[in-house]
Amino acid sequence: MAGKADMVTRIHELTNITKTDVAMVYDEIFSQIGETLSGGDKVSIPNFGTFLVSERAARQGRNPATGATIQIAASKTARFKASKNLKEQL
Image 1 (cartoon, rainbow, N blue to C red):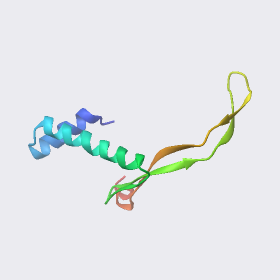
Image 2 (image 1 turned 90 degrees about the horizontal axis):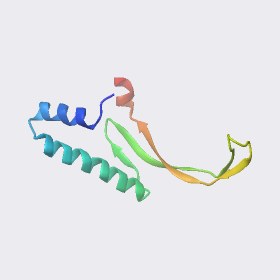
Image 3 (image 1 turned 180 degrees about the horizontal axis):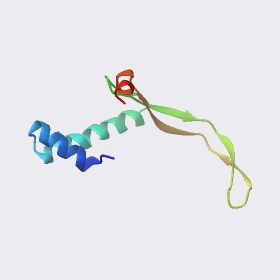
């Protein structure tokens, strides 16, 4: 699994941009994706995929410790749908 440090190093080696600058851009890209999703919009990156907000309906669940039925509130979650191009690369 590649983490932030691995990605920053790879991009630095391929582009000769300083690691500090690469890390700033990396952080800002994901910050902007988060802000856009928070506003309810989707983010589409060509040849990669689409980040979107999905609404989960309220439902009943069970407390695993007691077995009691509980109500789970509706919520929003982030989803990612891979593009056809990305799927073909895998």
